[in-house]
Image (tube, helix red, strand yellow):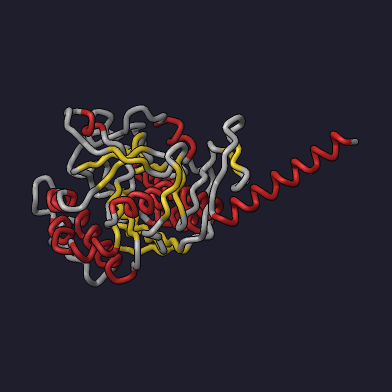
Length: 333
């Protein structure tokens, strides 16, 4: 009986201590089984709290000062173009609409994962389509309706502001920039229709943005792809810890990137120059932003760019490309 009494007393003291730590904002970890009783989680789980603190073992926590309030995603689609200004085949050699649908599906699944597991942040996805076939647009519409996510489809060719003298690829990019300027409040994610995302992508980008922007005390940019070109040259870089990925500083990307509304307004002329298509490479004005504001890409990658397998801006290294491709196959939409 005495032993039972002692055990009950110890359990009471343990529960009291856990509750006290939780109320004081401290986390404790059992280094024997890696349980974190203050969070009712395991150390291998995602233990950060969006908008409050970013936790990494063994580095401890970063109290978030730069809180994300909303995310607007602008996906540019075109089912007719294989590879812009190229005749090469993409990895998997599928029809272009298949890449776009799987890309959209992966983004929607990633948004849903975030909504299911983390603090609610207002997320909206806008599909800006460039003259695709009706059957493809129907597939897009049916896919969007499967998810309880705020969305819209904008048809570029039906827009009165559409300038036929400008390459439609850049005109759709320009349209996205104006929509973001008019309707966004915080983070903005511009994405092309051949990037297939890991399910944790949205959660990782939001969590990482809060953590790194807090640590640096400034707005940053993020690119979700770990491009092969980053390993072609031995150049020094900065490596920071994100939510569940390492992130390296990069000075180049394509047209898929995440930016804040503040930086969108600050570098509006650069973005308009990018959308004009007058530079070679076209992203030159975008890269000039990265010379002033830090941009980071993840290791390993959060998304694969389904370009030709030999492209230096193509598929990311050390990623199971086939698995990610197959996971986002649509059966009957």
